Length: 72
Image (cartoon, rainbow, N blue to C red):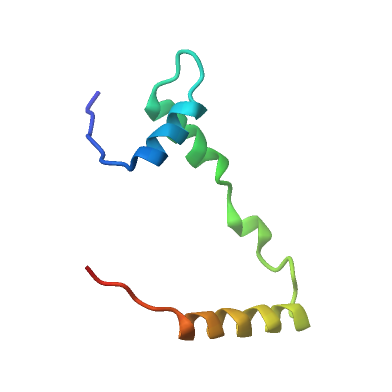
């Protein structure tokens, strides 16, 4: 089995380490977290086309206009 080295922040390493159970590898923990993420397609249309959706869309557009793009 091939392996890859990843650079992660110390705080992320601690969280992954805390999530490990006896016998788990870091790969096992990451795989479980990715599987738990779930499928968003099942939520499609859950809010319908009401006023709530319009409010959310407007709020997201406003936040995007106000956000700052950071470059390194």
